[in-house]
Structure formats: structure tokens, C-alpha cells
Image (cartoon, rainbow, N blue to C red; front, side, top):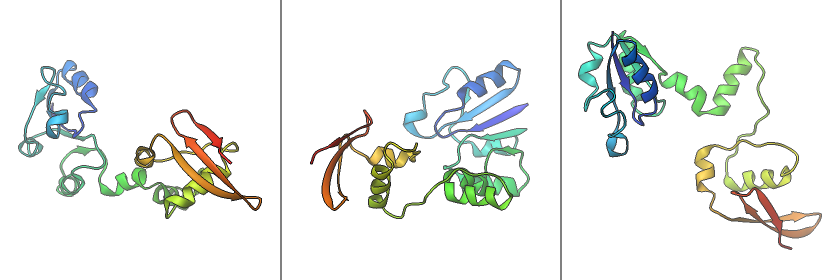
Length: 174
């Protein structure tokens, strides 16, 4: 079986290696210089995945951000694609959309809140600092520097806080 792995980040190398060990022919495409070395010497790397899509017995799409238009087009044309298209990727990438779909079908969802601005998030974080677990998207966590300061009005007094995300400590400054 000819398997084409469209994997921009090179994250499914282990699966590709197992496919080779099982006797399949694997062509692996990764994107850019940061992932170009991934899989070299272990699987057959290709510079352009498109010619192999026409002849592959299975096209494995290992990403839900890159090439979504192209993957959807392959699916529309009936190519044997295993992996998410744009609509399926949206379930994972947009938490509120995904939870709305789950609710629509009667499934349970965890409590959540969508934030329209960063300040509202900070207020909620400090308000519930010790009372609940919060999950934040990685993109937001990357924007938080080593120390974040915030001033809140608590019981009619201004309180200044320093939050140290790496140690998960919050210090009351005044």
C-alpha cells in the first residue's frame, strides 16, 4: 500500500515508521526548514506531496491548520483521505463551536466562557484563582510574559497583584 503522509510539523513520524515496518511504502511531506530533517533516513521524504496524492492508496493528513483548502478539495474529489477537513478541524480549534455542536446532540460539556478581550480573562483568573482549574489556549499562554501585573478593586480597595505564570504563584503587592 502506498501511504502519503501530509505532515507539516513532522509529528507523525512514529506512525510512518510503523507503516514502513508493516511493509507499506510511505512518502512523507513536511513543511519548511524546521521540519525538513524529520524522518530523513527512516522514511522516504518528498518535496512536493501533490503528485503522490494522485496515486496514494491512503492520504494521511496529520494537521488541522495547514493545507485545509487542499485537503477539502481532495476529499471532495473522492481521494482516500484520513484526517480532518476544515469543518472537522473547527471542532477542535474553536472550543465554543465544538461545545455548541456537542450540546446540539445532547452531550455533556464542561463549563466555559468565551472572552472578547484579555482584561476580562485576567479578572476572571484572579477572581477564581484558588477555586477552579482553568484551561487556557497555548496561544494565549505564549503571550503571557514571565510576570504579569494586574490591579483589581477588591472590597473598595485597590489591590495590585503580580502573577508568576511559570511558578503559578500570585503575590499581593498592596
